[in-house]
Length: 169
Image 1 (cartoon, rainbow, N blue to C red):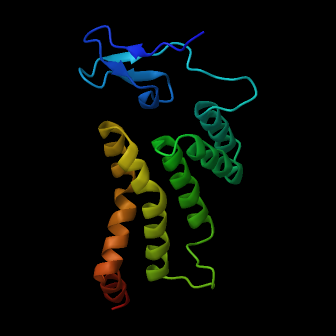
Image 2 (image 1 turned 90 degrees about the vertical axis):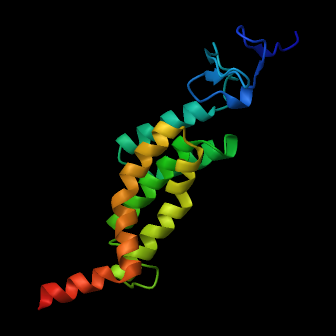
């Protein structure tokens, strides 16, 4: 049995399987007509990106962030541009950073170290999620990370040290 390509009923354009999101939706490359693709292909015993994301969400709900990180990394092996996985990695790593008091591997703390750790987590995970997400979701992600970005920027400008000196005076 041969595979049949997904064809737009509106213009006859192709709907690429790679462009289908994790919930089974796709768009025609030409006229941008949205489609719900029925029965996204799965093979018993082989996890899909969607099933791994679900497992990661369950791990987060159970308080096991380390396990969630493992699932998010598995998703990225299947779908490297999955904004949900990048965002999941951001939220988990930001939680780790906060839990460990923004302390670096040498035991250093303080505003500069905190800003560097926050910036690293933003660069590695959040900005990739924003890059791959649809515009409305990317805007939401930007809103969530705005406070962290503002903190990093204020420390880089030296504004944070000025505020500390004013409080001491």
